Image 1 (cartoon, rainbow, N blue to C red):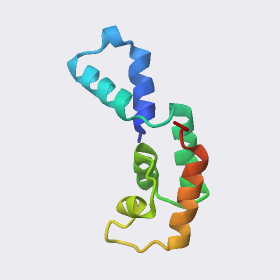
Image 2 (cartoon, rainbow, N blue to C red):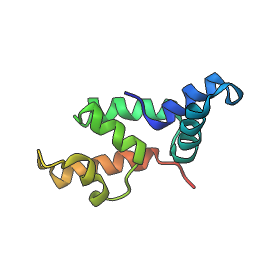
Image 3 (tube, rainbow, N blue to C red):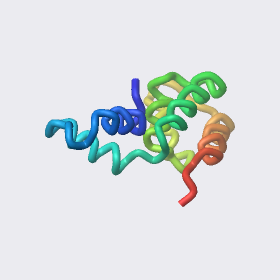
Length: 103
């Protein structure tokens, strides 16, 4: 599994001039929607899985979108199959806020 920033890094390694039309579309998407750099994204996924006990799929989606509220975060974790305590959601948001890009 790759985050959007990791996909962007892989496409950049190919070189913009060497991309086919589908890779170009993917590159444009990743350039527009990557919210952090690839190294940080990989580390965040690792920490969300290891320290905050999320599934890798959940962690990747959270890092891709970098939600800013508990309501946004619930979208990625609820999925109808489990209930996540508010304390855990707040801990995840606090963790993300520490690493969020300052704009």
